[in-house]
Image (cartoon, rainbow, N blue to C red; front, side, top):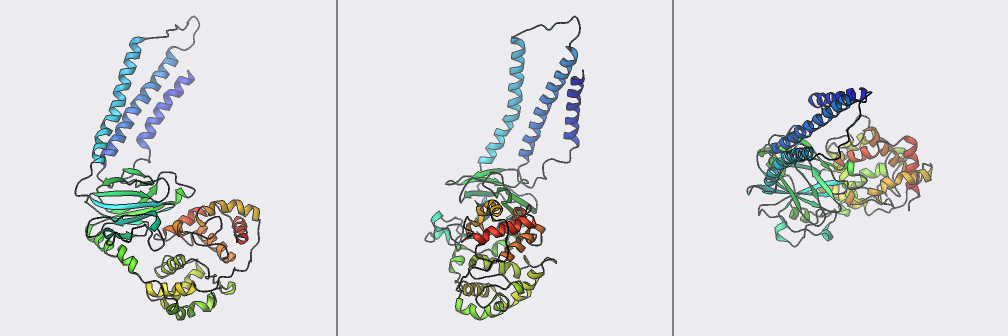
Length: 450
């Protein structure tokens, strides 16, 4: 009797939870309303079966409960019942799967007028590419991937010269026009997912998959990877912005073409030397750093990372938080670097400075730090030398006190909280579980790396 009541209450509670739950599908922002229809249909079919089976079970438990003088009648086969169950199950499965076939037919048939955009996934970030005026995307090869050519375009291919490169996890798309997203992986399996679009697809190394959709309203939405791709899979985030056409065209016009990136002059170390005079007041004439002035060592750090951080200070991604006292000191200093050329030049000069290991100022449990560093090694490498492929800077040989402070800043949201600092936000997620002592132990182990 009690079990029958519990089954009945389970049915009532489940139905009420579904009807009044605050959690359901996010608001739709694309043309794929049919996806929602198939999901709703699945809920109705499976929900009806769930209610019918459990109510029937509750009835049977109550109706045929054990009572004195009654004995169960064993019936191993019932052909009539089996026919009914098979028929109803077939109808239910057909009702769920049939409409999905029509949706899939729409999904694989891309409108001829759809614009093409390439989304490239790699551990653990997104980048994008638009065809130029010729309407063609250039060829790509893995051997051409570098800091200057992050997507690996073939330099000799004329079709790729006018390709627009978006070396940033934020993508803009115009509203009201169909878009075919070509999906390419640089390393392992990924999955391009924007919940508000509804359609998604895996990125498989060696092939190009695709999805298509038409944005129906403006807004900003998260891009996620929904295929486990490694340790930092949960932090592989991006942003897609659906713009009105004029806003999209303004954004696209600001993005460089492959030819423009290739023609960009390298930094001039000679021209950067007088610019570095201002930096030397704190960071030292040889970029050795100065703990008393809270200025970290610069010599030996990768140029691409220093350039990105200088740009972040210049454009307010770093040093804007009220609690980032030392970061705020860097902001006015950026006035001495008037443009991108000046930033590249001063970075080029820093790359010529002698690289001597920074003195150790912290000590901790190295064995414990080694275990903690296994997570860091996924991006920064087992030797702590970093990699532009994972947007991870060098750690070994740098100031331990500065590393500890930045981990604390990431953990507390002082750094990485700016909406445009997507790579900083990744570090915020990775450092969320660290405590002061574990940070010290972690940095103590990094001190031991050669």
